[in-house]
Amino acid sequence: MPEKIFVFDTTLRDGEQSPGCSMNLDEKIEMARQLDRLGVDILEAGFPIASQGDFDAVRLIAAEIRRPIIAALARASELDIKRAWEALQEAARPRIHTFLATSDIHLQFKLRKTREEILKQISFAVGLAKSFCPDVEFSPEDAGRTDRNYLIECCHAAVEAGASTLNLPDTVGYCLEPEYEKMFADVKARVPGMERVILSTHTHDDLGMAVANTLAGIRGGARQVECTINGIGERAGNAALEEIVMAVHVRRDVLPIFTNIHTEELYASSQMLTRLTGVAVQRNKAIVGRNAFAHEAGIHQDGVLKNAITYEIITPQTVGMPSNQIVLGKHSGRHALVKRFEELGYQLTKPEIERAYEQFCRLADRKKNIYDEDLLVLVNEGFKDIPEMFSLKLFQTVSSTEGRATATVELEKEGEMFHDSATADGPCDAAFRAIDRITGIPGTVVDFSVHTVGPGTDGVAEVSVRARFEGKEFSGKSTSHNVVEAAARAYLMSANKAAYELKRAHLSASAAGSVHENEFVDRFFPGGY
Ligand SMILES: [Zn+2]
Image 1 (cartoon, rainbow, N blue to C red):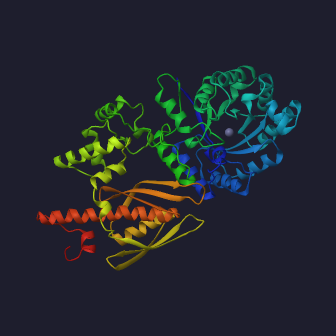
Image 2: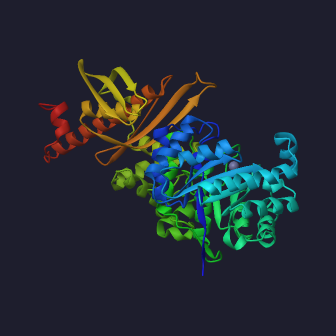
Image 3: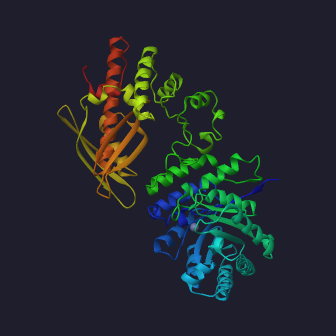
């Protein structure tokens, strides 16, 4: 009978406190809602004594998110624990998570306390937390480097004082798998009363072994895993939730365990965190990276197109990723090329396929990976030279702390000025919507990336946008010191290409005598061309 593994998400606590990953109150609540949809069992919402912002986040999340247990972190002190409990007042299922370092290194250099003093403090803190809240978790910080016999004593003290979860962190990402596994097995075997206590892993990725160590902890007897979306966290990060969950899911043939995570929400969770923090995962990141389901080798591509199971252990649909991306390169064949063009909205005729394939091969000789943007350039050949149908004359955005933004744009078309404004969740989106209102051809952004060129904060931003207009994708690129302006120019470039293409298609249709009504053409090309 497979056993359930409880997933304890600490994206909003251990993850959020890492450099570059901080979120404001609204962003934390938005992320908490997604973690609820994802199905996490325990959601660590923050460290209430750390700041008023953390306190408010825990309080509001506890009041709104009712299904998972909501945990709040507290050091092993009266003030911390009371503050955590105060923040959890409205929680349906509160948990106080208190911690104290137990390794000699920490005792000597950080806490300057003796082992006896620490033992007393554990009993006191866990007992106090228990007097408020029936669900108490205790973490002996740096358990991985704590003397084993002393660790057993500390765990015993915590269990006696009422801890119902014992978390054994490898705080510094130092343990090897067999060591981490053995620690759990030892605690389970030697601490009295463990039948009433759940053991938990908490691993860091300093040696790239956070997920492997998590699985080792499970082998040693852990039934809760602490982890974060995209593996964000201190230094090299925490164990990545999506990797643990998918390892357990894909290898259920040999692992007698399961989680209640809705795997099809993994990609959306990863994307949301990227959007909220601005910290993107690398292309080759397991499970959620842009290339995680991309295949380049021709033999692989042909296999995947025939049946994905040939080279994929997970389907992109399982993790909620839109479709498996084939990265084209010089080993790709016509089949893969035609298929990708179809996905981008282009049904090529036989002669067009030949022409595109020939150009594609030439490009592939010079460039290793051919991305959708490159394919769009092939098929939209000549667009680079067309005069801008609409050009950006004025651009302004106003953002509020509430997260809403308004953009005003003024576009010129053949000497005539058009201006309009729109409001959206972010300034880029607002700019795109304002452009849409003028051009009359609304686009959906399917890919958006920002690169900074040059060092430091005064580097120039290069923004690439790929957007779908009336079923076809077009790309645009622009650079500026202002990211939002670069985004608006890049989007406008793709809209210009779409407008040009619509005009061209309309012209050839009318030449063939099959012209039909088109709102866009009526609006911008009245009375013919
Ligand atoms: Zn940690």
